[in-house]
Picture (cartoon, helix red, strand yellow):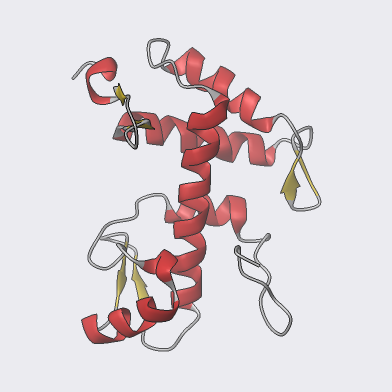
Length: 156
């Protein structure tokens, strides 16, 4: 499959979204892990300004015809991954939720998941769905997550 076929951008009101394909996601996550290990772009547990431009350059090198830009494409996709990663982390810190490393998905009772989603909207869409980048995102974001008393979620 040609990269351009799978990553077309649909234009129009409410349709200004980029459809990412697995190859693009794979390269983005690889580049994110590399940049997160580079002290020039990351310190004190957070990224420095301009790191998305570095990701854009790396994706342009690996996927020259994809036309993925830092703003809004990469920023939006990273926001999506970070939100889903934190939702998984929150579930895994509760009793009854486990991670299946083979299937790369959350394991729990459907009713327990639905109850959790009533108060945690970011967790919707994660039941029975593989999240293959959990381990890599854990290397990138696990130190950023505040837990315990006084911790705020991303909406605070």
